[in-house]
Amino acid sequence: MLVHDLEEFQGVKLFYLNEHKSSIGSFKNIYEENLFFFNSKQDSISTIKKAGTIKGLHFQVKPYEQAKLITVLNGSLIDFFVDLRPSSKTFLDHGSIKLSKSNNALLFLPKGFAHGYISLEDDTHIFYKLDNVYMPSHEKTLHWKDEIVNIDWPIQGDYQISDKDESGLNIKGLKEFL
Image (cartoon, rainbow, N blue to C red; front, top):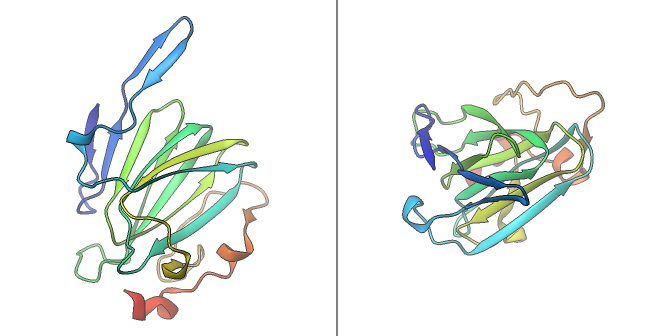
């Protein structure tokens, strides 16, 4: 497994999984205990039906903050993350990385980041390994078009966005949680 730091964002790492192929299929390890810095409490899979679907930008507040490992099992997406750690030199900055079945990339986001993505293909499946359980009462959504964060989302025709994500709050509305 190759590891790369995304230097400008402290704690964010990109891994490339080794894939072992044979005439009958393939195999890859998503999680190796000695490479990661948290104890997993939940594994989740999200399935996106259509290209151009935007999810997020989600995060959980104390005491249910989550560190995340994210990879794509089928299809592809551009993953966006926003640093919400007030003491960080990259506070309110965002980054992005393409994750796909074919590039075998695995993204690690430490606690304190909002996370979202746009699917680039129909039938995209995303796998998450989380260090804390999903707690709806502590989940917050940063609006995907927040003017302060100012993410330049790729044009994919008509975006598909859930009501929950469309009603996310801007940074000003989330200040008390940061």
